[in-house]
Length: 466
Image (cartoon, rainbow, N blue to C red; front, side, top):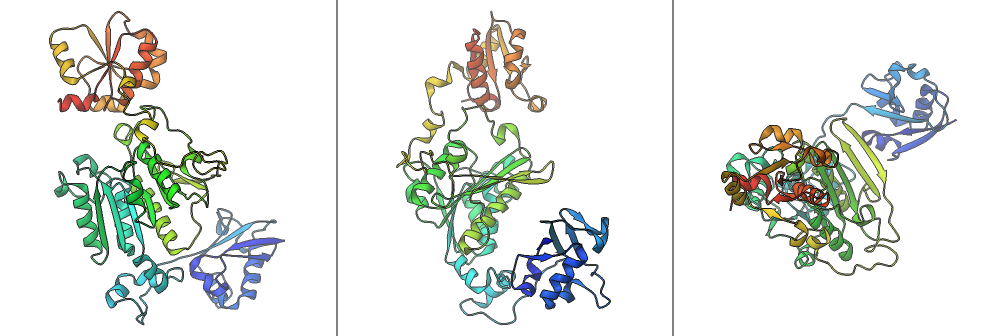
C-alpha cells in the first residue's frame, strides 16, 4: 500500500533532494527498508551496522512516535505519512572562499552559505535586496534584527514615535537607556551594530496616502509591523497597486496572525477583511495587553517570509493564514482565497488610488465621537460636587491596576445587559484607557436614552491633562 515518507532537510541530499518519497509498505520497518533500498546512501544515517534503527533518529506515524506504538512493526494504512526526525545541531563553515563575498562576509554568513537553498547566490541576492519595515515596535523590532543579521543589503524603517518604558516589555530592539529617544534613532544604532555592512534608511514620518507610493516603491518587499487599521489598509492597498509583496502580521494578547498578501499571486488583506471594525470595537494592545514574547514569534515569522521572498525559495504564506496561540502553544493554518468581488484585486477593481484611511476606518470624524468632556473639565465639575456617575468600561484586570475614585466598573461588553444598574436621571461619564471603547459605550447609553458623555483621551488624559 502507498505510504508517504517525509524527508527532513539534513537527509535530502541522500534521496535526490526530495522532500517526500512514496513507498509501498505495510509496516514502518518495510517502509524504511524500501526507502533505503532505493537510496542506499541513506541507510547508514538511519540504521546501525547491526541493522537496528539508530537511537538518534525518531520515526513518527502521524504525530505518534513509533517507540510508543509497535516500533518497526507498527502497521501502516493507505496514505499514511511517515516522518523521519533526526537529531540536529549546528553546521560548519565552508572551507573555501566563494567568489563575490569578502572574508568577513564568509565568516558572518557561514551558516547561510552551507544551506543549499541559500549558498553564495542566495546571500548575494540578499545583499542586493531591500525591505521596508513599517513600524519599529513589537513586530518591527525582531523584524529589523533578523533582517539585518541575515544580510539584507538595504533596510528602510518607518516610524515617528519615541521609546517609552512600556515598550521595553516586548520591543527588544530598545533598552532602558533608549527611553525618551526617537525609535528610529535607537533602532538604526542597534541594527548597524548587528551588521555595519548594510544600509539602514530611516523615514521619520507617519505613513499616509500622500507619501505611501513614494516610500514603498523604493523597496523590494514591504513588511507590515503596524498596530492600527488605517495604516494596515493603507499598506495593503499601496502594495497591491504597486505589485509589491506585503508580509502581514498582527498580535493581540496571546494570539498572532501572519500571511503574505501579494495581489496577482494570491489574495490581499481586503479579501480576508473587506471592511475594518467600528472604532473602539477591537481594543489595541495598549488596551487589551499582549504577551511580551508574542511579537517576537510573529515578527520572526514575518522576517522568515521576507527572506524567502528575496531568495525566491520555499512555500510562502500566500493564500494561507497562519494562526498562533501562545497559551495553547499551537499553530493552525487556514486557506485564503482571492475574492473575485474584491474592490482592490478582484475581477472588476474599483480602487485605483489611495484614499483617506482614517476616514475609511471611521476615525477622525469629530461629529461621530458624540458629546465629550475633557479631563480638566471633569475634575472641575467633580470638585464642584456635580452629580456625575463615572462608569469604567474597561476589563476587571485593567480596573485592578488603576481607576478613578468613585467610579463603578461595567465592562463595555456587559453594558447592554447592565443598563438597569444606572440612574437615568444623572449625567454619566464613561471612560476607558484612551477613550475609544468609552466613546462606543457612551453612544450605546445615549441610544438607550441616557445623558452620557465620553472622557476625551481616557485615563491617560487624567494623568497628563492638557
